[in-house]
Image 1 (cartoon, rainbow, N blue to C red):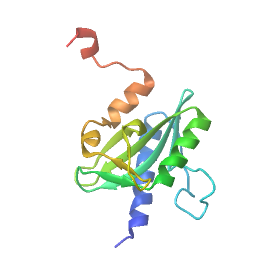
Image 2: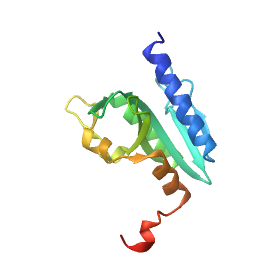
Image 3: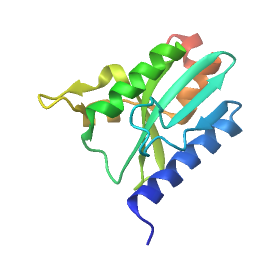
Image 4: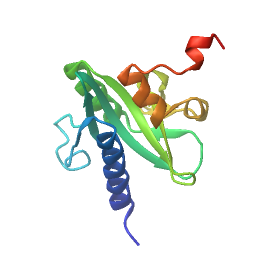
Length: 147
């Protein structure tokens, strides 16, 4: 059986491939979980026509609260600030295989300095097609009908 770390890398590569096939320039930072702690590497950076998306990737088997170490969120936010991009927590629900994308503005800081991604925010998150459409400027047909 593969280690948790190896499975995490596999999910990062999967997301990178999905974004690439949808027209994004994508880079997975191979040092994102290594000893390069002083450097600010996010897990994935995706660019589409000048729009920069920066991702911290997490996995869970079910829809639940997810806790993220403070330093991971801070490096994500600093990289995003420098790149003038948008920061997301990308969560793969392994039970369904779906990807959920939550803006870092939905994170809640805990008293210990870590961050909580509430289950409610995960339930309201963008799925991959909606994320891609919003970046590419494609509108849903319902937006034209007023429904």
